[in-house]
Image (cartoon, rainbow, N blue to C red; front, top):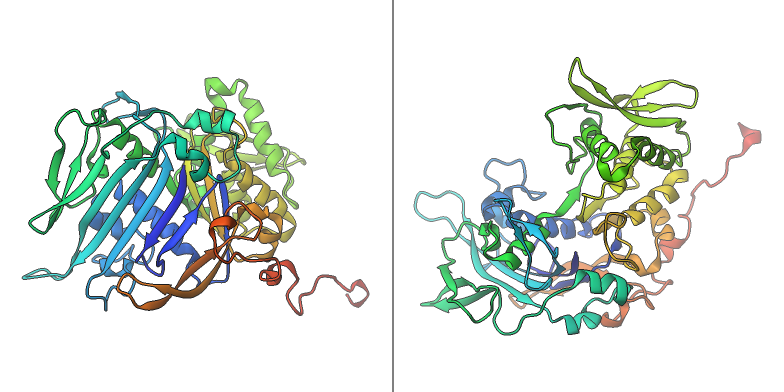
Length: 470
């Protein structure tokens, strides 16, 4: 669970600090940089799994180009003399993870702060494109005694906090950065603290982060950090992927674009923990039936042993059976979220861009309620019935803003921000509402008067239909 994110120098994110709870809605006009927050989270997740240049190629704005320029990720990257990006992420990591060799690893402490600084090195010689350079990496524990002041979102100390926080540590960090002859040297420190020598390595030519290299249980806390960051996903459900049937040999977990939806639903329905598979299908169908204009009599996955395919079918109340490829885009996206809600194995952070897209205004309450329920209930301990999921959405819809709790809202605008070079430049500003849990650390939170455009109908909006004129 990502509880705090700090970003400086990434696209238009300058000295940005965000506190996150189980569910967060970022609202604001197009062009403010709301999606750049998702890009930053996605970049951190990718950096935990692959080399820096490969991760840069997959971030929005660079992805798809054969030799995308990494300077696109930096604020003023083409003009700055010393482009750099700084990240800090405070997180609650899993209390138990599995390493790449199937061994169980338990972190020393589960509340951590990860810091990363990346620079850019211009091309030289025969090189035609520059590269990313690792300048700093650190992983430190956060004392559990500090948790009440660091975890400010509403939650139960007895049930939630005591269940997700564990362990203790004093002294050195798990990862630290020092300097030798003007070059950064990054060291891994054992979970045992001062016992054992640190393992240093020069960072100047490192292709990736230290976290991305830890695959075994010898460094359980760093491994748990990596697993947590790997679970941060950008959910971009694509109708073409959602309409595709699954082969018997395909994965049984839904991907970020919605691919393998049939396999995921089939696995959930037939798993031992679910009991009767029809109960799973009935819960999904009942949820889908909340959509106005969709006639739902039932949902199931049909296994075709001849073609070895799994296909989702919707049965209308009239008895007509429709395969997933015949459903509307909005219905398919809603269905995918219903399946995600049923999946106890789908944990981590999910970022969703404008979940209201393709949804009729009459169905927005159902959609908002669904994405809110995807997030973990912080009044209870996480478990099979309360998966440890976190959800962040962005929107420019006044209707969504009116449906979301004020505690969960952050409003986006563009304003002057100080850069690391000392200049002032337009950057993303996120502000909470006055009187909410995030507001006490914000110098000037928004009031309801500031967000009036989100609370009233736009001028000229047609809210009624003159039936006599029809």
